[in-house]
Length: 276
Image (cartoon, rainbow, N blue to C red; front, side, top):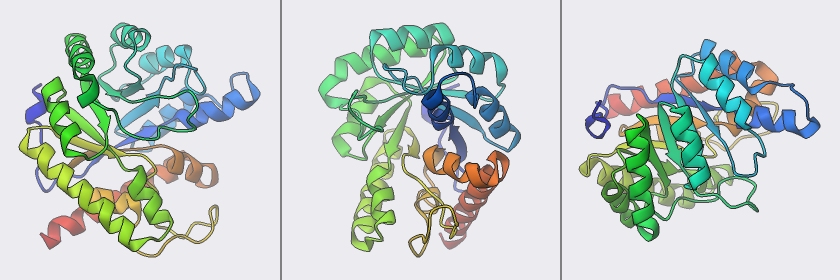
């Protein structure tokens, strides 16, 4: 399939990629086998997840190599394998042959991914990685900020997709900082427009949460959630959500958590299309 041409029509709803990393984080806190992220992934698929996302980090702090093998064997929906652009990770991806790959920056000291790739500064390396993974049958996405230079570099690298880091937008929403939220939304919209003009399929993720006033996290900011804000952008084909969804699932169960997120995504997209 020519993924570069696989752009959304205005009536499409973003696919939901459920990141199961934090199930593995809980398991690893005590060691052993419980809770099993593969079981969580199966429940997520039963609940309506379109894609299962996971990040095999260099330090194996959550998902481990055996998890990757078992996920590949157990699931019929596409896997979205997040990984740093290292020889070790590229070798594992080629052996695993997941349907989707998202190349991300990685620092050992970070708690979670703090920003996007510097594709422009590593263009040769990114070109080689994209070509190798494409030959292995993987659809490649580059995880970047919605910055024009990085978007243009992603297209030059041969990536059919980009995933925009929504952490700054999500944090501004949590802080109820209307000005900052609007600023980050404008950056996102500008990036989406440029990516579309370059034939790139666009995804988004990081820090996205629900607008429901849920008891597990106290009062939420007023207005549309960060998930709804992202889902309303009609060029976004996929949303990849982990921490907030898994946190919500601890209280309502995996299937209900996915239903809550998907309902908000569908509502936001339909409202945006109707208003256009």
